[in-house]
Figure (cartoon, rainbow, N blue to C red):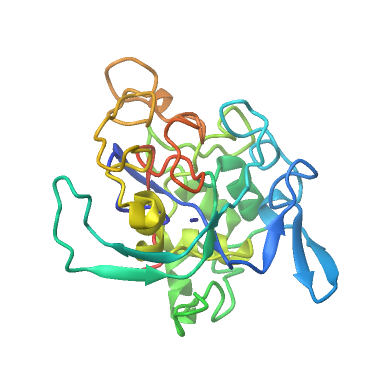
Length: 289
């Protein structure tokens, strides 16, 4: 929520979306059983506990198992990204400065950008508002003490759910939110502020990823990919089969809402190393930092 993905190599429209990062290794997804993140199995000693993530608990459209190019994937799937060291702003092609190494631990990053359907559950619950803000410290990165929700940020939230719904219609042309469930439930949510993205991730049992984490996933870690899908890593091939960009999502010139496509629409061709879709193209995404 995933940066969520602010430093994309191929982006087109500045209405931000996001995805969510989650704690690594302490759980494993049980796919094809319930809607993604609707069923999460945590191993605790010799026992397993089932957790229903709030955004997928209802199984409504866009928060069920109808995401991806085949319409048969968990909308909340969150693959494990294996930690390691990479060089930030390095791609071995146009940027060859290795002055900025970063090391990240294992973490999970949502396969898809957060959909309108998932965000609808958040709004319906009245969360992410001044009437019901996150608790102080929620959404904290486990290795970055003090990175959780600050109560002074409450003033940056909408007054209530109705006001939030209005704010999400921030553009007469490009906003994906609708006041009632309709045809946009599989589109990535946009028009969400950083504070709203943070609040959503915390409410949904996750957190925003750091810029280093998100870029690590997009670069394929130590592979240092030019694009998330590059194979070999220095391959600079890009066209509409890999990413949604340049206002060409609908195949015609000119920018319109129809250029914003359902999450994962360019999968698997445009997927990153660990299975995340839309790491390049689609919406700009929020990071923790």
